[in-house]
Length: 115
Image 1 (cartoon, rainbow, N blue to C red):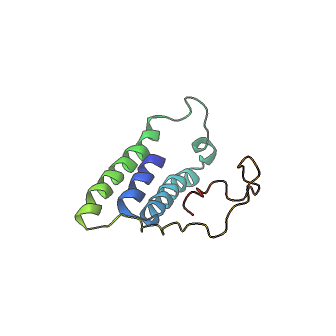
Image 2 (image 1 turned 120 degrees about the vertical axis):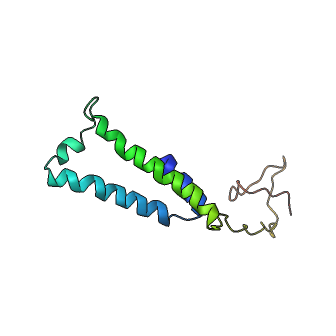
């Protein structure tokens, strides 16, 4: 399920369709369980507890994912992130000891060779 939703997010460039599919999946799986009063059975995760009917939602999600993956490019959905801003060089010089080691540990993840 997670792989299918990540492919949909990647294809559409947003979370909206994946959230909608996830919500519909939860609703359509829980309503029959509540109506038939088998909610405890449907939430049972023991080995062998689920029958072949447990494969139906997986097949449906796979079909929906394939449809979205074909639909998005045909509809001209642009799935690209904005260009991140350029990292500016540091203005303040770092303080170093006699061996050249930095005295201030702030910003260790930033490359200070730019400035």
